[in-house]
Image 1 (cartoon, rainbow, N blue to C red):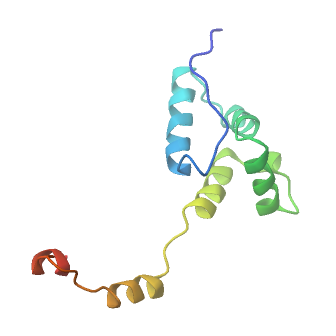
Image 2: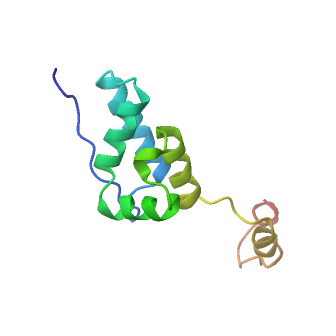
Length: 109
């Protein structure tokens, strides 16, 4: 069976986790990989040692291989794309100042 495409290891400095999983999904589609166990094994083998180490610490005392593909993707999503704190967002909103030359409509938006 021919393998189409190539998935590099995940690098948080260059790529967003959601973007990486979207590319990985396209890789699975191109190569007709539908089994979630296969998806999990491929993900664990291509994410790289740094991300794998992070994943191990997130699932401790379990091992990453004991988790499902969806669980792994969700855990790393929550780590790399945390939900913003409403308190912090409110503080940013209240501390916003109008700059010189900025229209009122732009400032209010």
